Image (tube, rainbow, N blue to C red; front, side, top):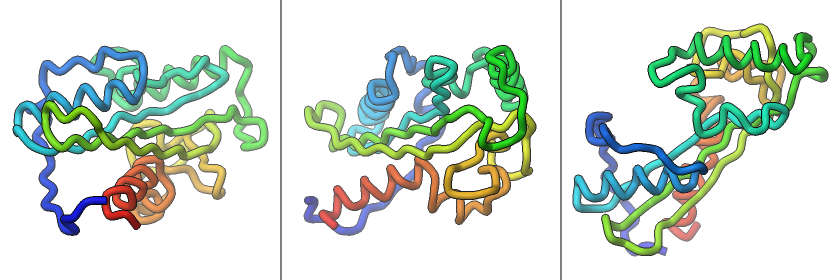
Length: 184
């Protein structure tokens, strides 16, 4: 438990992580790489995450490559098109949620007190659902139009930001980290 109960959080500029390679094979290791790199730059405490979509019938793909599934600078549309093609090659074509392949979004959140701190705090969140072949909804980003959470009848792209944050893998990880840090 931390003595401090209020924290000033500032979002890092994306440029602060330029050149940092997410070269590890797991979400945990990649989040730690980012947290350490950022801690070096700010010489202080940092919070970093790594997250992505895991589809078991595709051997866990897109997984750690979720944002670059179709290549380094691929768009969301290109990544989604590849996901649908891969699922169709596995025989999935129905829009029926019961026949859709299982999937989950995973997030690991890492907190470091400083660049050399040996014991990071880590929390995770898992948002389970299924992948629909045809997209639905206009909100969100990434795979949201194809992801149907187990908790409802609307895709992640059909949820309000408040609803999505209440259910999502990132929301879960953030709430777990808050509880861990505040001892609640």
